[in-house]
Image (tube, rainbow, N blue to C red; front, top):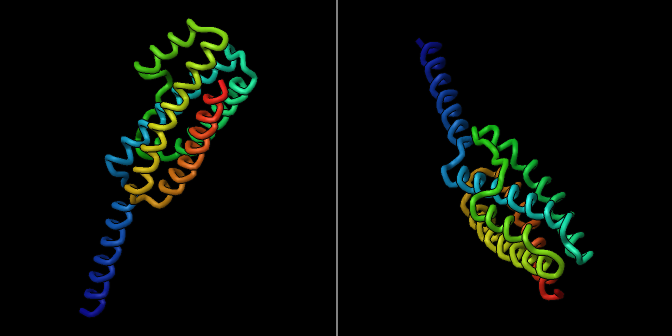
Length: 169
């Protein structure tokens, strides 16, 4: 009888631990929404910046665009394991708002292009920084929070670089 009680107690403890473990690994709807938004933002920044690599005339704007492509690809890669484990499909194209921004940029050249691109980068990175700041406070997933905080630092640096460069144009 003692063995049966021990076995039942052990089964109860193991079952409780499995439930706690499963709950801790399940992302919240907020985490999923943030990740979807951040992934879309990365695609937007990469595609707009690839265009800027081709069309920018100011060497500093061109260098900024190259940095955006590289760093947003790194950020996407750091979040990809979470997206895969959470069953989210990464976007592959610009969202509707950024499609019109892309078309507008594509129709510009010279200093007009550089200024408009940098205006977009300041605006986009300001919005992204707010999202990263909120997610860093709200997420309960410690591993995800670490990635979010690293991304927040990167986005803040991008925002500051974009703002400083915009003032010089």
